[in-house]
Length: 142
Image (tube, rainbow, N blue to C red; front, side):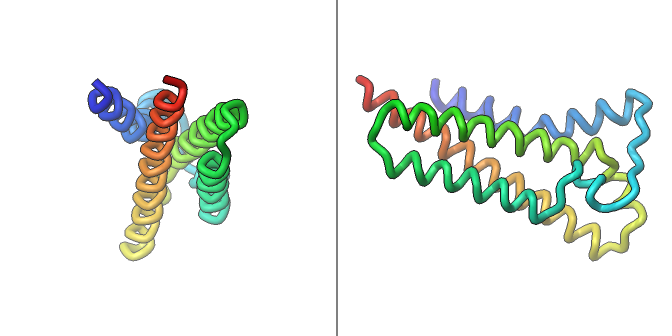
């Protein structure tokens, strides 16, 4: 059952940015932007890395405390951080990433896609850590 839930969560996590992009393309929205920042959902690569480090820091605090109340608070904070990061990643697609990529040379396109894949992999790792931490909390309460 846990594997089924995990698989469902991961599939949703990975599919939502694509669904957002598809929705934006069919809704008649103008997906062109004017600058890399706008194409990245108003966030640059440095901002994304900073958010990722913040999520990792929150999980480290979780691991370092034994106080159940503080652990619950840190788990809630981590979930909010993951949701914000996920929304930012969806904004990359809605913000005109596809349109900008058409105007890039192949090396730039490859680099942008690699950055996106790295962020998605980081989000997967955060989700797995979050789910493991939730399981640990349940085991501790039993």
